Length: 448
Image (cartoon, rainbow, N blue to C red; front, side, top):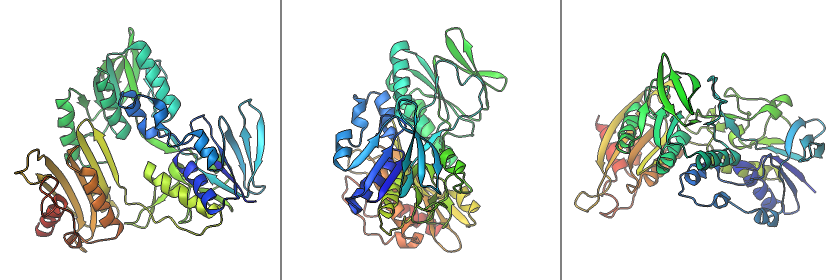
């Protein structure tokens, strides 16, 4: 019987276990989980805190009973501490604190990522939080319920920071967003960040950019954030949302190779440098289809796919992960921001000769009520005409996610900007135009 041991019970780990059992129903699959929340959607925590999801248990993709019915042995409150690749064993601390040794035929590392913790003095103070795991979300929710803070500062304006700005605003708090870069959502071009910032201002969200956070201090019963030589905000609650970094300690200590990004290096089969050990999800690098290089891009969609590949191969399969193009979307109030592929500066850094155009048009025929503007930035390679990436922002009802997925399919297939015009896309006046907005943007690029 094939003994498959999985370290980590989030998206990648559970996807791996489920797929392994599908491929080999006789496989003995054990999942070691550090907390007690296997297969929970941590992406949903801001919506739980904001009250859009009333019951935290709804964030579970599957219940414990469903995982057991699928043949997974899930061990909660078990922490892997040491991997011995030669002996094919893993040392694990059980709930009583005793070390137990597990043997494996195949090992899958799905250890995920942890919150990046910038060295800000005072980040340990009561009322200052990070958020990555279910327990983090519970701590935040409990603090908000018990203390009823009125003013919040969020340091970092990535996905979690933006979603939490809406969540805290929904709770009636005055929110200040603080960003070191010159624009919010720094993974998007400043032009897109400016459009989103205007929407936030309309909702009463204060935004401060270009800040170097020096210290967090107590100020009476509250907290003070100091940036440079000034006080940037006086608040009652602080969330530091400075991104994530891969959790690789057990792998690195076992001599498993890390990539240039600091995540676990894998090949297309999700195999690591150690025999019979795979890695998947936020702890591992991922293959970028446009450049053919390995990058670090911790996304839930990628974790599910990589986990499935690792699980199938650990169970005796022979399949490969086809890679990503960096497709992402974000909802903030009634705005949707999305991207796929490279933006101009990224493309230039990869050796392309990028040309980027801006285009704005109604999301559907203007004569049909309710049309709203869609703003598009399309990037292609001047020399070859290769489509390199698109960024988009628009109203929640403007089919932004559907349209970025169209772009993702084109990028995945390696299409030229000119090829994209020939896509046979759907049309009805309430939803689009005979030429979809993304095709109109392609026309502009070709005639620029």
